[in-house]
Length: 282
Ligand code: NAD
Image 1 (tube, rainbow, N blue to C red):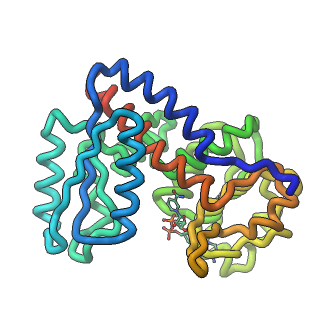
Image 2 (image 1 turned 30 degrees about the vertical axis):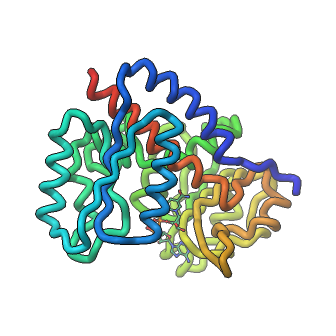
């Protein structure tokens, strides 16, 4: 395998070292409030991993459990209570949410300076303006992995497959800010039969779709940087969206799945929390 592995936990460890120093200079333990509505195994496992990372950094992780029949109005009231609670520095709402809750609009009720997922329209607007202090965690994780290669993004041909609000759209803006040439592909690109042509041109390829084997190894440009955000469970094994072995033969750098973007995403959440605490202190 000629490609060098881009391991999230190595970059995460460097970021965590810096965060520990910043937390010490805050003079108080930052507090993360995590809201979980109803019961969901996936959400429980995210909470566990977040709580562990928080503990390692000296962050208080407050789990707030609400019942599965919580209405949109009572969830909004609960968020407002946390917005006004000076002891809370950051708020995260675990997905999935029950059907009666409009998950797309709920982030807009979190105070922008406590929105550590970076999904409040005001924070997304700052990403658009190139002034982001708090950006969506998965997009920031993919961006940090690209930067870890030391690549100069100026004029680079970047192809992102997937245009979600949490990954593709904000990442395209972060990369544009560095003067990369960014192409964003999605289901329409595939349906038009044009995905392969775009992927073949990518000096940097980011894939965030959720379909195992979508990106064939032979499509990867020689010496490309490949960031695979996808998570797919196949026969109890976790794999990404890119054919890993074949792609690794051609790429210069590639993220493993699991172990690439995932471990860094939770670190980015903590980085946003520390940023939020600093903004609140000001
Ligand atoms: P989403 O469902 O919101 O968006 C999927 C995107 O893929 C859309 O842009 C859609 O148009 C595109 N798409 C679907 N089929 C396609 C096809 N055949 N060809 C090209 N594009 C296609 O997804 P999301 O929430 O952004 O998540 C994407 C993947 O990333 C999932 O596997 C998810 O589990 C994973 N993910 C990982 C992390 C992490 O920390 N590692 C975090 C978030 C999401």
